[in-house]
Amino acid sequence: MTEDQPSTTALGATKIRAVHQLIDETPHILEDPVSLKLIGDEAVREIQDHPEEHGALPARGLRSHVVLRSRFAEDQLRQAVESGVTRFVNLGAGYDTFAARQPGWAHALRIIEVDRPASQAAKIEAFKTARIEFPQNVEFVPLDLDVADLRSALAKTARDLSRPTFVACLGVLAYLRLNTVRKVFQAIASALPRGTTMVVAFAPRGRGTEMQVDTSTADKAAAQGEPWFTRFDPMELRQE
Image 1 (cartoon, rainbow, N blue to C red):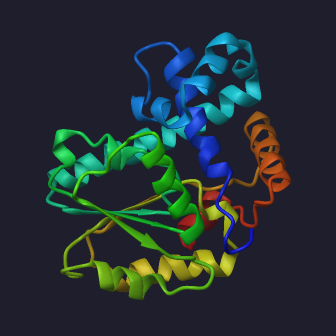
Image 2: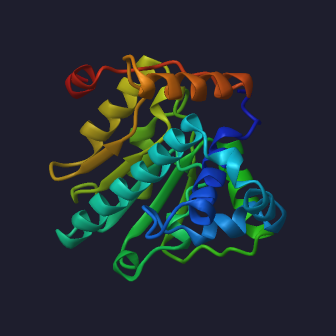
């Protein structure tokens, strides 16, 4: 991707969350009504008119992954808030809608969204077009993880780096080269104190149905100019 090119796969994840709202059985794994406003009425009608296009195994597998990772991260965030955490860093936030649909327990949080400048600007404009407002506790930090210093960015946004923070990094690691992933981990480990929680989603190495779905997703991302660079074995990721 060029520096001034916003991510297209990030917007695709929002459509996937919208599909979950429209065609999957209730109760939903993730309640995200904001995603419907974001994709617009025409896209909503298209999904409703052709639900069969989203029923194949690869589509259901990818949808499960997208909504489960968000639900898991938000459940973990709530636990962190209940333990006293007051800052949430959404790393590579894309078109994530949590900040715009935050529940009551999140209102005391300081929410910091970090993303590539072009992608973040496109998101803010898309939300304005859809007339979706962000609450006052949301801050946007434009930052390209491949070239910029995450530790310095975190230090500038934090009033107190001594307090534990919750960090989410979903649908991001696969698009980063291994040395960048390591820099991200090192920045968080060095800038934030014990008690900080980080939830990540990653592309696995392996075989079977899960890997087939994963490979299909990677191929589509590469076709859009956003190739995957990094995969992890779970134990390898723990070691990192």
